[in-house]
Amino acid sequence: MICYIIGGKVLTMTGEIWEKGYVRVEGGKITELGPMKNGAPFPLPEGEQVMVVNALGALVMPGLIEAHCHMGITEEKKGMEGDDCNETVDPITPQLRAMDAINPMDAAFDDALRAGITSAMIGPGSANVVGGTFSFVKTHGRAIDDMLVRSPAAMKVAFGENPKANYAGQDKSPATRMAIAAMLRQELFKAQRYYEKKCAGMKRSEEDFHYEAWVPVFEGKIPLKAHVHRADDIQTAIRIAKEYGLSMTLDHCSEGHLIAEKVKESGFPAVVGPDLASRSKIEVQNMAFKTVGILNKAGVKTAIVTDHPVSLIQSLPICAGLAVKSGMDEMEALKSITIYPAQICRTDQRVGSLEVGKDADIAIYDQLPLHVGAKTLCTMIEGKIVYADESFPLPVCEKRV
Image (cartoon, rainbow, N blue to C red; front, side, top):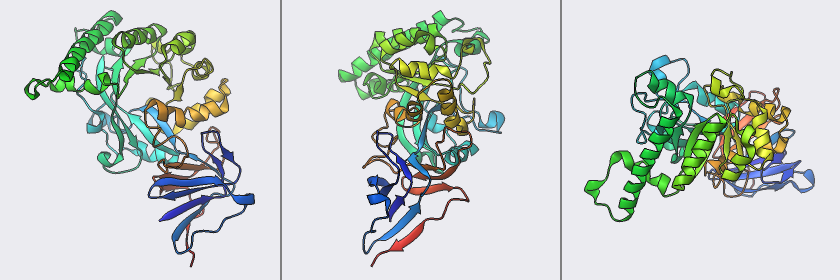
């Protein structure tokens, strides 16, 4: 069925803003959009069954994107039984895949939809030097295989306190930042040699399950996803990625504002947050909502994240609003929860903006979602309404003959 969303203020995130616009959806994709002629309704196609969503007085924009979280892999209210975030017995586990542990039944997915969040990057935690691969998923569904957009989507590596705290207590490496860096270098050294042999025509019998996980990293298909808070850890991650010629995202980047020019020079994007959480450990003592704005103004591509459940997934737009309050440009903050995370997660060909050919992942609000009082009126994923507030008018099905 064809769907028209009409009458709302359309914010495309590509530069176009129409005070009264429309979006046409067919087959789960955006097929047409633009301003309404003279602000008035237009004739609907004849002989077609059409669903009309009246967004008059509302804001229509792309669904929001969470670029780093653990929902469904660290489930709420389930304790050990629902915590599959960290395999804390081996510091090097590239072969682990988040998709094998994400439970779409986690209540956080419903909270995401109610906030207009339509996709998320989900993966392992930061207890290991190498934690395994992330998956980029839609936030509606019952089977993770049907929700996947990109998997694997990134390889998790971690620096700083978390790997130290986990393994120092087990009387094994890493107990220092030196050991974390050395272990990652050694792993990358071996993985690179494996990749070179594979490119040279490795026999099937010589393939190794552990190192196969690194192949898309060295092919340049997915980046390293580096857990880094402190300025020195950020620079160590940059140093190692450059040594091996790998792409990378700097996740959390809590002291990135202290070395903004270094981050800019690296060319790596910053995935910043969770600034709404407490400063619960030494390495986040300089965490602040100003960080993402400073990095953004320095020319770094930025995404704002909750790191759910560290801060709750539904607080994503509020985190962007608090970044604006701390000096970030409002439009750049909106881009940092839509098109920029889509680009950083390499899924912008499908999501992150309202454009012809992209998935019809759409959020309708009563005002800018950055405001604490903003209400999500309707959330659509691939043209299907997956959440609607009770105050939002029901779609009308019409047929012109």
